[in-house]
Length: 281
Image (cartoon, rainbow, N blue to C red; front, side, top):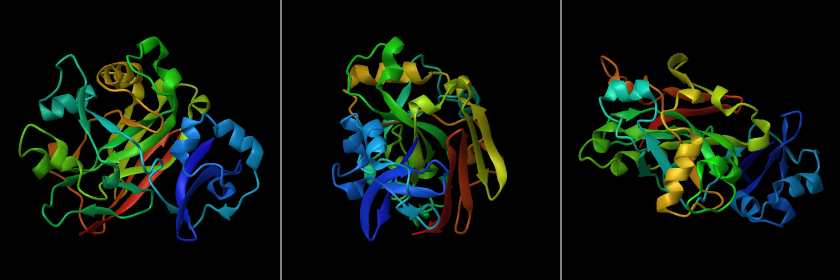
């Protein structure tokens, strides 16, 4: 199933796509859970789908999307996690995942503007697969790591390279408002048969900039969950952004950065397409 968060009648809510993909069932309107994170924490997604049925409450067309999980407790991002990206940046290879954090209020939903800040013209794209944690855990062994995943989504870890590189810490360049695209929805874990075959393609104004499959990750999903759960407790609704392939704009000659009017989209098969128009603000 495909679960998502959105705005209806001016208020945030959540639900899932109907089986034909044309409509949305508004689960939040039933009043049992306030948001998708709460429903995930209660392990209630299957129950809610059974109770709410497959009749659409509103069409998918024209929907105003929120980030798939608008209010995660943590967003943990993995840097330098494809060999091609390590090679193009000249970084990585330390033997442990490179972890940094993104704040929830830096996220933006599918179809909403991604903002290139007026402070810098170095906004770059990073297409990635996101894991949404479904079950809490600390010191999770790799063999049981996927048991803690509720589903998979798409992330564009928009990066203001100038600010990212001012020091050795990534945080400033990763947290400008409306630079972290997240969506359009989460596909539940049981609907992805082969996680290694998940394919990322990033397109800027229709031109392919990145392409890779998840089996090329340096640290796979299990490695990442095991490592992150060592230094913090993972909780339902947490988001782990697993790394971007080679082909980022900053590594090109000349560099390619996003600006006013550009359209950036990240497709992850079999999840869907995350799309934004870039504005300056």
